[in-house]
Image 1 (cartoon, rainbow, N blue to C red):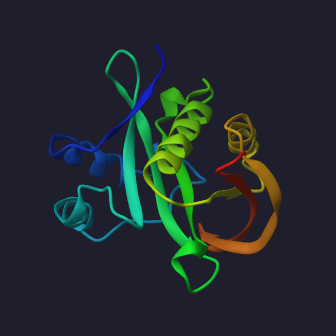
Image 2: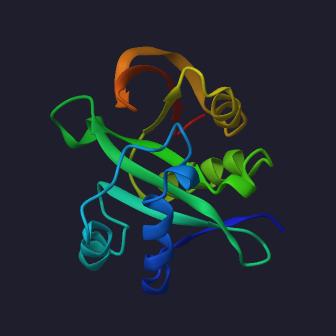
Length: 170
């Protein structure tokens, strides 16, 4: 049996706040600073972290332990609804990195979004130095498109990002 994605439950919120508020847990490529107090709980009360334009799912291992979370948020490449794509992301706990969980979780998130939305395009971007995530995205069926120069501000400086995509028909 492989890992599975599942919705965030109210009982998960304390743990998720600890994960998201800890630079070591998030890792160098996912730490963007602290969030306002209560932001996660407000989002959960609003839509259970499964909104139309933004969401999070937990990565659960076969033994029931959690390995991290995946996320999506809308990006628009034009003014009409058909121009909406989702940018996806992942944050695995340090103990679960390098075991193939990232590829499988991102593959499952892509399948979920294609099955439950009308979106045609998924995107993912990662730091040019994050070779492990680049390999994970490629194993998850994403195609490298190019480099976005100085696209992300993190840790006091701008970083180049590698952009990947996966289309519904891929």
